[in-house]
Image: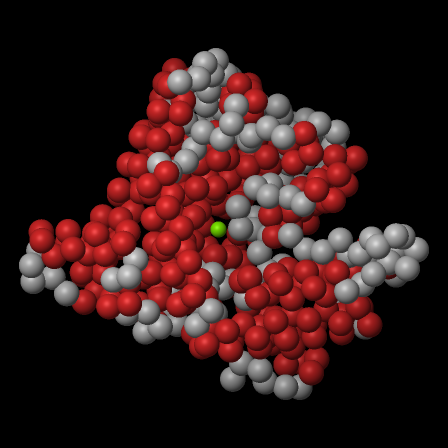
Length: 400
Ligand code: MG
């Protein structure tokens, strides 16, 4: 049996990524008899250790603050769902979209952005005395870390590190990359996934879609979690035109609607309109270009987008969430403690590597490699494991 192909099955658009024309894997492997290359990538992501840890990692609210808030895992599932819906409508490759979406946050530290900021600061503080202004650790970028997870850190195969995913999946995972890190990646993999951050160009249309689906997902679910937590109210949300429009429509359709059902109906209408907007705007951008294949997308300007009006409204929602939720004193207070846990752990493991499992202790490695091994160990932790480690090593309970 030859490998399955999406081509005759779903009528992929010519500019969609076709697994049969993939740029392939870093280590050649025979194709699977019943699954396409991207289906296989999705399966590898789901079976990875890093994927299972996402359930115990913070999205906005710390994992132990409540059982009903989004975690990195449920967030990733919501991104995959939204991206697949849009992909099917635009005749893009759903399997690739799903693989990228499920993997996009694998590199996140415990405690969401607070943990990432703390780890970045810890690495940056280790200036290398032997090189001009080069920070020893090169900092921490969560997109790059997601790529490190699938390229290097997962230990599941007999003859190579990582999951050996296809180029297109890895390209989508590396959503952003600093120029300095792109240059280092380019040395290891010339013309590879980092090249576009140096030479310009776009990623595949599926990668672009996952990027926007991520934003649509977290804007919507952070409203839900914000109201559920009591930190946001429906009254406050009246200042967000995008939300208020659909709340008013929900009340016109169902005059007696209130409470959580009103919230859910408003979010549902908002999500649907955003999805339709992306489909319309993206299709219009595609229609004016001649895109004979997936590589034509890489040479074209970004295609997947909101309309200008929806982009502006989404921006208002984002800054509302920043002001009223992500910077809410109650959220900031827990993120301060989370930052403390991560930077304390980093300092301690660097001084006393024997506190880590043997696999992370590299006695003969350079200071840079040892710092990176500590960062990898911490980045892989779940919230509760990091809290327990901090209690074990410092004897203080920061999260009672
Ligand atoms: Mg995300």
